Length: 109
Image 1: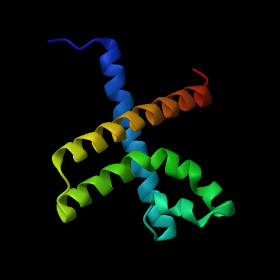
Image 2 (image 1 turned 90 degrees about the vertical axis):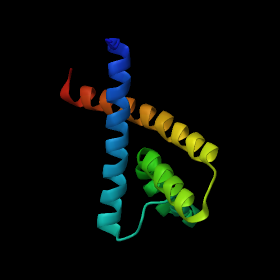
Image 3 (image 1 turned 180 degrees about the vertical axis):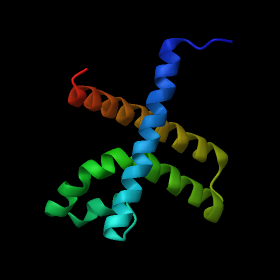
Image 4 (image 1 turned 90 degrees about the horizontal axis):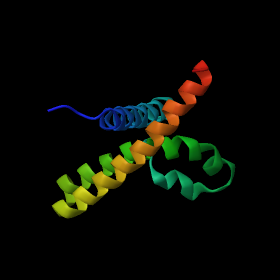
């Protein structure tokens, strides 16, 4: 069974988006000693604006992390977990595509 080139590109984009997401969330935690979460936007002001790009690209990781924790701790239903995973993967496709395009732009390809 052969995969179409567009399917391979989508898988590559998804993997890059998820990897970038985890990298940014982990780097944020390393440098600030705080977990990256959407509650960082509640501070408002310049801090919320400054953290917005990090949250935009690390959102798939945050969504998946919170979903797994919610399933384990709170026993959230499987359809909720499936929906959250689909949202995170869609977001990862978008952020992965942006990252690939930015990398190509920087390299000049």
